[in-house]
Amino acid sequence: QVQLVESGGGLVQAGDSLRLSCAASGGTFTRYNMAWLRQTPGQEQEFVAAIKGTGASTRYADSVQGRSTLSRDSTKYTVYLQINSLKPEDTAAYYCARSPRTYYLSDKPSDYADWGQGTQVTVSS
Image (cartoon, rainbow, N blue to C red; front, side, top):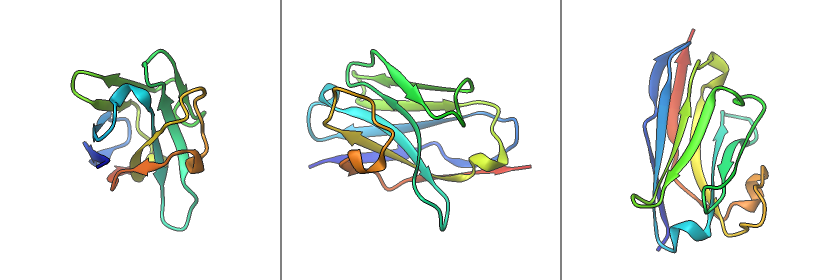
């Protein structure tokens, strides 16, 4: 049974940093690309970052490029998203997702088959 469990969200101030974690179970960890996407009420899901199953490459949205680092630890079946210099516009529910389509790093929410329940990040100005 697939399970993705996010943690690490919270209320922070602009300029702070956060590290979100996603613990995965079910299936072979390295056979899936992993991603973070976010959503605010009334808005579409927005791609944030993705990492290959092997961890060999990553992709970031322009909105977080240069201030975020996505990594994965295959010994802990966990993916980490570090976001620095947080801005109020980073406020959203952050979701971990995985895709079996490992040949490319997708930024389309529809390409991700399994999703976690989400963790809320709120950045105050």
